[in-house]
Amino acid sequence: MALPRTLLRGAGALALAATMALASGGATVLAADPPTTTDPGAAAAGWMAVQVKGGVGPGTLADAIFAYAAAGVGADAAASALARLESVVDGYILDGNGHLVPGNLAKAMLAVQVAGGDVSSFGGHDLEADLRGLLIATPGPDLGRFGTAVASDQSLAILALARTSGGIPPTAVAWLVGVQCPNGDFQWDDSCPGAGAEDPDTTSLALQALLAGGASGAAATSTQLLLDIQGPDGAFSSYGTPNTNSSGVAGQALRAAGRTKAADAAGAFVLTLQYGCDAPAANRGAFPWAASSAGFLVFSTPQAVLALGAPRLDKLTIDGASAAAPVLDCPVAKPTASATSARPGATAVVTLPPTDLGVAGATGAPVDESSLPAALVLLVAIAGGAIAAVRLRVRR
Image (tube, rainbow, N blue to C red):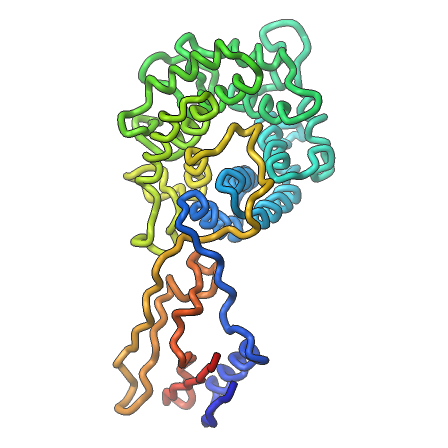
């Protein structure tokens, strides 16, 4: 790589030194491009992988692992998420008094199983032994309940134990059936408020557990409930709002129940809300919670992916997934030259769109090296109040 002989002063010298360090030996100045994809699920998983790098909570780490496995991409990202989950598992599965939290424990165990980890030795815990130790064996209304579990916690526990050689305790399934509402609904607080207040999220998770536990009659009732409350556009609503979270988990559950047409309709609905190439680069591939909400992306995106063909949680696995997590394949805007300059005759500065040509991972956008111009214009050096433009030509 040949550099022109340029007089550099002050900050200009620092700019050249930094650039030479990055480009020494003909190395690529920018980070390698991530792979791209046009597959909606893979793009969503790739978007999620970028967000996880920025730091998310343990529950979201587990959700991300489920999304990678559902999309069949991001095996490396799943391994990284699993390592991070292990480092914080105590704060997730234990409450402030050191007691095990049933739902968090079961969700962590499922994440380990999906990612191919060892549940018998995870962050100093034998997760399976911990979970089985919560099972109430005393006759009475709590027989088969995992500690203080509500329906969603119980469902996660059943799905996690379905993947073990010891299997599901029959009393655990019986307890879950016992909190099912007459119309097949399951509520987050185990209540039964009646028609118009159904909880598709909890019902969908419980339906998966009922199927795993062989409770076919109860499963059929909950399946019919989901079919009855599905909107004509395939959507499922929570709090009166059609959304990607509810539609994602309901689509997954209906697919597990053999209702493929309804599951596909739920998947079609969530795709109508996915951010595409016309969205800001930082959002491309993500799913907002609802059409009226641009937020909650790290919570809604991994749930929405489940509607796009994911099997039951006790069947989900990262095995066979590609190592990388691709990003949405979008055309990259060409750099535009600014005609403005500090004085007549000064070199024009090339403006690189920050959302498309930034450092990989900084905004969640891919870096497309192939779109760079032959001349890479660097920094404007400031010295003694005068502005001098420094241009370095990189020949590939």
